[in-house]
Length: 503
RNA sequence: GCGGCCGUCGUCUAGUCUGGAUUAGGACGGCGGGUUUCCGACCCGCAAAUCGUGGGUUCAAAUCCCACCGGCCGCACCA
Image (cartoon, rainbow, N blue to C red; front, side, top):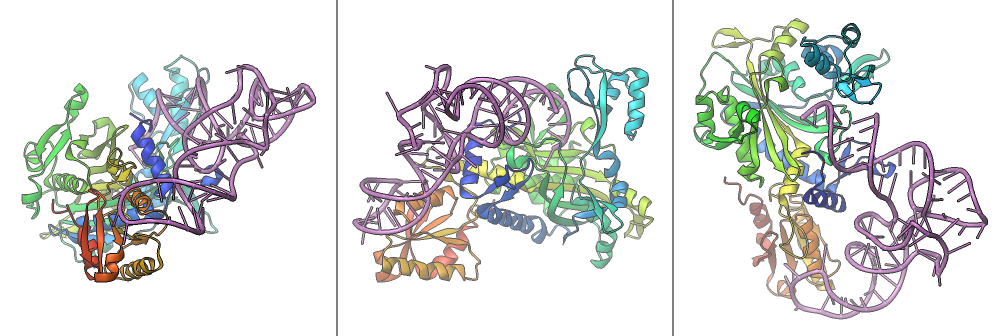
């Protein structure tokens, strides 16, 4: 279930390297595990994905207000101490002196002795091991090398070397800015705050190319609401009818299948804790379906109690079926009022706001999208072999990096200069289209290259173009060609981006 | 972090077992030129590998030995 051993994954990674979607950071120095750069096509694709997400989850959201912010990547010690990350976001570890296996110390003690050790320091844990003679469960050897593996990158800020961390999730900026946003925007519950940006986690041994990174991008929303009111959500009437697949806790224990249920019914039956969460689950399914991921390859896994923090009111991971198994691409968490409570307490600021004349601390539902994983999911679901003599990347037209390629049928002066003229007009056009120009090799070779890069349309300039100012427009997915007038091209390419999005 | 497998042009690979005739060969891709009126066409040419790195054995090492580095897989960990 882990690693990328499958042929498909291998082909996708190779194509990504060959065509400039992504590659290891500092590759010429053999790279550094867990860090990847997006190449020319990957960077454009990411920008398009983020933009489409912002359209869907921020700009076009009319069920409640969504405010977009852009916070600092570096957060001071106190903020992350309060959030619990400083204490909780690390694993105590110990190594067996005989067989060399590394174990998680807290798990070892909790399982072996049946005592809770949450929040205990590494020294305290070591003492417990010594007193109770806890040994390696694998071979019975003695434990050594006690140490804390911290998942946050620590920084020393300024001359005084004040301790700070690279944020482990974008969410914290939102809680830290909650009061300011609420007042500045005169926000009324329910409302949401969204953020797109980088987060950092110092994983022990990341693998699986772009799937598990130490530096990654998140698109997150925190939706604030009162737990005491029964809201109607405008778009839920419609969106709530979406069928979603949920892998319940019971089914996970039996090794069973996900159940299929309308999002509305999932709330009614108490499977999903509230309407806001169900609303997002349904919206996510529609979002990813429009990005070419079939519903049968998506499921929400209700995380088991031992996988979720004590304050959680329920976490539902959106998992996508990859060639190497199911993997989370969105985490949906019902965080209750945990974050605002701890930040109120530690900062001394009253973070409660007025709701219908009553001061309350709002509850929070958090959908958290992993950008690189989504990019990879789209690539894998778009990669197609066997259709032509070369692989075709049937990327969702809205996120594909290049919307069209402008190609002279032959590299002859009159055709090439006409093609260049058309290319320039599109590049400078108001629709802000990214298009490429290619006059090298035969026309078939250029179609093949364009297919592999996932270019939506190929515009070919031939001798008829010089007569009547029309061109052929070839569709990547069908290879069919139609004739179009040059003056209609920009609108044609633009409208083509939205094909199939009326889901 | 431990164990197994692997490391030759950008990519795939021949050669490694059985050391020497290899200026380390080919294919794909790339680049230049020619040709070509729509799907990796064809022809000519060019560039591209200190054989992962370092040390050793030998008259001679891509080839044998040792160490290290990196990758993949499994275990552990993890979004």
